[in-house]
Image (cartoon, rainbow, N blue to C red; front, side):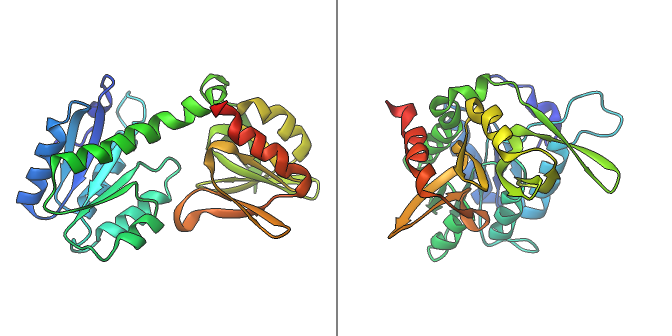
Length: 272
């Protein structure tokens, strides 16, 4: 198994992390993945604990390395029933990463599908695994990877702005591409990312104007959201809300009547 950052030196093929504590099942999964022409490299891990170690090395080269930090796998295929750390716990850990990889569960347990999708799984495959079913999962992963730039080409083209924020004398640089939503907080805004939130002294209206062409939209006098991360738009009577992000870490935010029409227009524009 090669778990070093050398894997990031690749062309356009997918790099997939396969995780299963049963050797025959892991070998079969890796074999089926490698047979698909869209997969360039399969990295195998015999446990969820080992998978975390692989991901840590993948994202952070050694201190003496001159290589840049790695981007991680394009997808993770994993079993659920594993010792020490099970697949569901690993998926929950992955979901808290700033840029979580798509997760596909491959398991003999047919009772955990609801929980799997609650942690943001792309698919849920039952053993014994077929090449056709695996191919359908890879279709979803490829579509998911292409979705944001296809629907919001301005995101790919726009320069990634950096917002400096300070806390207890420590300056942190927050990249706009990591922002899920922004919340007005008095004379400040609170910038929410997957990793946490930060206060910045800048008017919400100014950010809304500056970030409009980068795929952000103001949904309320107090909220600005990243359009590609909106997963649900709901209206119950006079109340309107959006969900930003998927799974248990998705955030529900109010939408004002005044901003609802603009939100719907911006969401549907890419398909016109």
